[in-house]
Structure formats: structure tokens, C-alpha cells
Amino acid sequence: MANFVAGIGGIFFRAKDPKALSHWYEKNFGIISSENGDLWITEKGPVVFAPFKQDTNYFGSNEQQFMINFRITDLDKFLEYLEKNGVRIDENKMSESYGKFAWVYDPEGNKIELWEPVD
Image 1 (cartoon, rainbow, N blue to C red):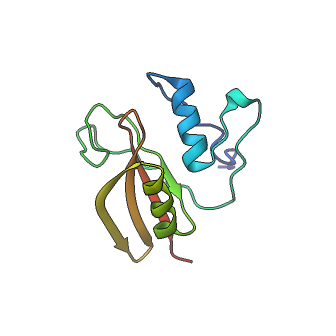
Image 2 (cartoon, rainbow, N blue to C red; image 1 turned 30 degrees about the horizontal axis):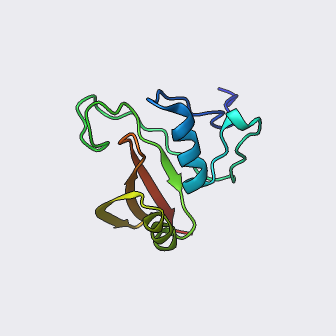
Image 3 (spheres, rainbow, N blue to C red; image 1 turned 90 degrees about the vertical axis):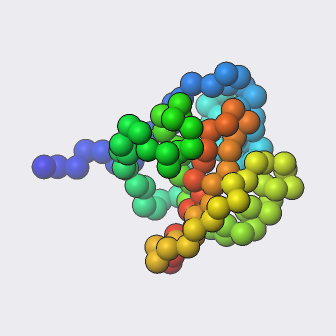
């Protein structure tokens, strides 16, 4: 079968306060909101697409239906930056043969995974 899918074209999700949440992601992650009339251009790299069982607790709350995983170039420095900005950081961290992981939460309580891949 030919591969017609070239990548992820967008991430769409519900928010209690979309403008405030867009601002938070732009301030802390540098992700430009489509509201600003521009697009976030990402670097080429691996993307994991993995449906989880309905009752997983990996995302935190059972109400959270998805979790975004961001590739990070320097996890420790990025966590320091987020801490200075008052971002809620999960105390758990993980190191695997394929990279280091940490988790943070946006202002609406959505758990976000941060991944620094091994070169």
C-alpha cells in the first residue's frame, strides 16, 4: 500500500478557555496558535501513534482522552525553564534505552509527556 500520510497536520482538542490555553502553550512551549494567523512548523522526526486501552491510567485522569508527547532537545534545561514559569511538573521521571521522559500539566490539568530521544 502506498503511504499517503506525510505527518500530523494538526492537534485539535476541547478547552474550557481556548484563548488562555493557546497563550499558555505559546509562552511555555513556543507553539504558535492558529488564532495568530500563523502555523507552528515542527522539525522532522519520529512520531509515535499508539492507541491505549480505554481504562489506562497512563494519561492521569480517566477523563483525559489523549496525551500529547513533545520531543525535547534538552529535557533537564526545559524542565528548569518550565519550573521558573510556574508550570506544574510531575515528580516522576523515566529513563529508557530510547530516551528520557518527564510529565507536566497544562492549566486545565491535561498531562503532557516530554521525551528527549536518544540520538
